[in-house]
Length: 240
Image 1: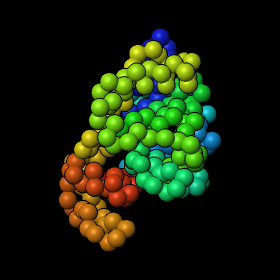
Image 2: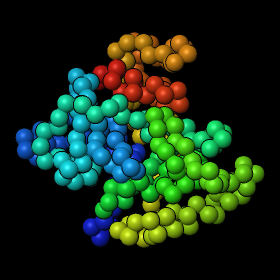
Image 3: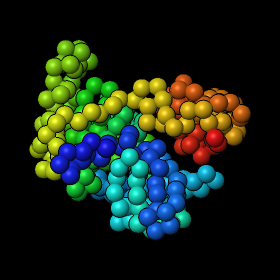
Image 4: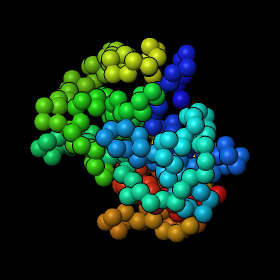
């Protein structure tokens, strides 16, 4: 997490893969594989243990976000609805045109509210988003994205300025430094899966084999699962 004078921004790719530790029992509870949103705010964490069982950690039970995440009490059995896939979600306009993929998300540490979504070319502010659904993020009708021809010329010059503008205007508790928003690159946020062994075959929705049972997970496997939407299967069907 990025910290500055007691405040920090919650970056989703730093949260996923974090280990959670119970302060009550002083034990490692499991690994964060997703978060649950409600009205663009963090409602809680989805944690899985070594037995691949899912547990829900309400935000009220989170003590602190850090290199590891500490929680006040033990998590509860997963009774929440199926958590939405956030990273890797397709971003579409009102007319249904796909304009990108969600590679990262930035939250305000004080209010746990979504500030922006990082795509391949820019950051999309929460004010531009109408709905976050299962695997899809729908933009409002007036949301505008730069044309591909302009993206290359403005990418290097304006990205840093845009990040400063977002942190200062949208979240008063945000540090003034530019936040390092890492873009999905090979293993990326799921690097902790590298070297784990698949417990059974994983196939895409179209039936294409992505990884065989017994194979060791590589960056290419992670990238393929991320793009095809089978990353959850990879999370729950692999062992050390």
